[in-house]
Length: 299
Image (tube, rainbow, N blue to C red; front, side, top):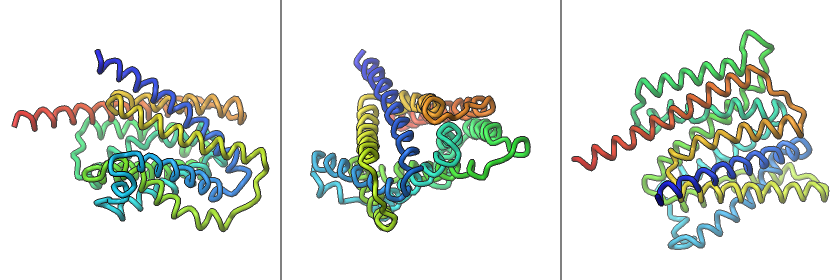
C-alpha cells in the first residue's frame, strides 16, 4: 500500500514537473527571441548553481563532500553538455517553434538506448533496437524529408536531443561512484563556468518587465528540478518516466494559444510513434533491470 501511494505521488510530481518545464520553455522562447541567448542561459544557470549549492550544503557532508567527485573531468563535461543543449534548444524554439522542437526532441530516450552500448557497455537486445527503428520512422514522419519542404532548423533540436542523451548516459556513468548531490552540484558549476564568458560578452540591457520574466524563468527552472528530484525520491524512475512525455502536450497547448503555432497532422502521428517507442524502451530497460537483480540475488 505504501509503495502504491508513493508511486501515485511520484506520478503527480512528474506531471507537475512537465507543466513547470513547459512554462519554462515558453518563457525561454520569449526571452531568447528578444535578448541574446547566451546572456539568458547564463543568468538561468547562475540561479541553478545557487540552488545546487544550497542543496549540496544541506546534504550529508555538505559542500566539501559535493566537490569530491571520482570523475571531475566527466562531471565538468556533463555541465558543459547541458548548458550547450539548453542554448541549442532555445535557438530551436525561436526558429522552429515549441511544438515541432519538442516533437523532434522526444527521441532522446531512443538515442540513450542506442548509445548505451558504446558508452556504458550495456547490451541492447533486438526488442529495443526494434523500438529504436519505430522511433526513427516517427522522426521521418515529423521531418518529412523529400515530401515537404525540409527545414534545416529541424536538425537543431535533433542535435539537442543527441547532446541530452549523451548527458544522460554520462550521468548514469558517474552515478557508479558519485552521489546524486555531487552530480547535481557539478552540473550547475560546470554549466555556469562555461556559459559565463560568452554570456557576459553578449550582455545587453533588459527591460524591467523582462527582468520579471527572467526571474520567472529562474524560478521555474529551480522548481522544476526540485519537483523532479522529489518525484524520483518517492517512486521508481521506470514507473513515472513515461509521464514526462506529457510535457509535449503542455508545450503544444502553449505553442498554439500563446505563440500562434499550428499542430500539423504529421507531427501528431510522428510524435505518437516516437513516444510509444520511447515508453516501450523504458519498459524493456525496467524488465532487464529486474532480471539482473533476480539473477544476482540467486547467485
